[in-house]
Amino acid sequence: MSNRVSSRLKKLFLGKDQNLVSLDDPYATIADLLGYVSVRGILDAGASNGHIAQRLLGLFPLATAYAFEPNPAYRPVLDNLAARDPRIRPQYVALSDHEGTENLFITESAGNTSLLAPNQTLQNLSPDGSQVRSVTPVEVLSLDAWAEKNGVKSIEVMKFDIQGGELKALHGATRMLQTHTRLVYTEVWFNPSYREGPVLSDIDLFLRDVGFLLQDFYRPKYGPGRRLLWANALYIKADL
Image 1 (cartoon, rainbow, N blue to C red):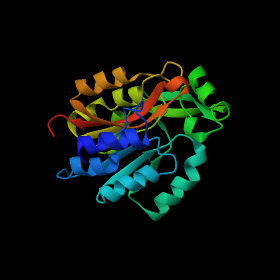
Image 2 (image 1 turned 90 degrees about the vertical axis):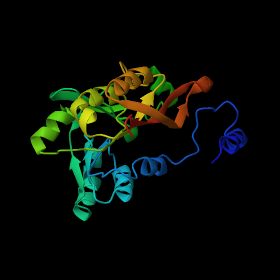
Image 3 (image 1 turned 180 degrees about the horizontal axis):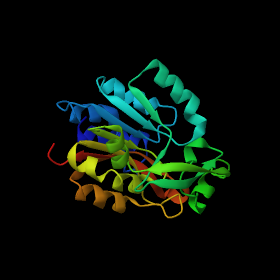
Image 4 (image 1 turned 30 degrees about the vertical axis):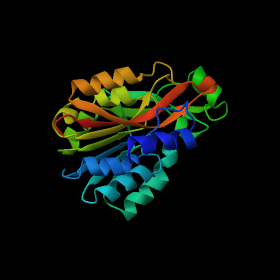
């Protein structure tokens, strides 16, 4: 799609104030960018019901998808998916930059559940869905330690949607990012919705330090007053 046509469509359908919108399908872009890469390992951090793992496996059918999801509400559906498709390997732990135990803030809306407590921004945006229903201790570990322990040699594609925990999880995957990972698709935060959550610049600087470049933004979310809150960002290894 030409830039001129894309710009006109954005203004027509999205309004001139929404200028951080890509009309491209991120998964089509992922397939194009990695067309000549042998993808054998996929990380789905914040797997929820496994629909993203399934979509990525549709692009890379020879891969194994490691679906990390600490919220016990999703365990039955992930177990069912794994029983039907052995390429999906659920991991019922949370990713971070260390090993140990942390509290998981389980909210009324499962999509808001996080290792970080919701802040006032999220409470204003989703008064009901951000309510903490329970606080449950869960196991946390780094991806690098997990991969070494489980004999996982390479993960070429990483996806993160873990509600403010992305930066710590990325730090815990430094070795894999520097060696085998070719693409990262992650939620990024312009104005955090969780206490002590990272912002885009934190994630961007880290990923650039380990050899990645920003490709594009997708699906931004705006809050009250047209304030930009978060979006998904696609990063590609610089040598690609």
